[in-house]
Image (tube, rainbow, N blue to C red):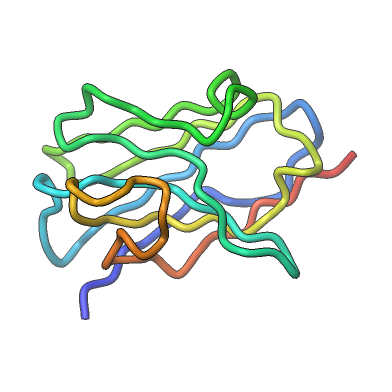
Length: 125
């Protein structure tokens, strides 16, 4: 089974920044869409951001996230990043990267076949 590997999570104060990275050491995903989801305790996994195969198109769950987060990919390195700025306590969650069929609905978890193990992001007030 192919695994994605996230890194970059941690503890940060409100207003701070973190950069999450996701790598796919076992195969390339240049033909797939990448995305980031997050899951807080007791809540469903929710879509945060996605990026098209070329990187030309990006999608965010809402304007607040779009104003603070930036998704990017490097097809040469087979990686995707999520730069998170002005973090808030409500951003606290486990963040997951995913890769999947570019034709599927980008905001649905079931659209993605490959997932990382998750990285914890904790924002203190």
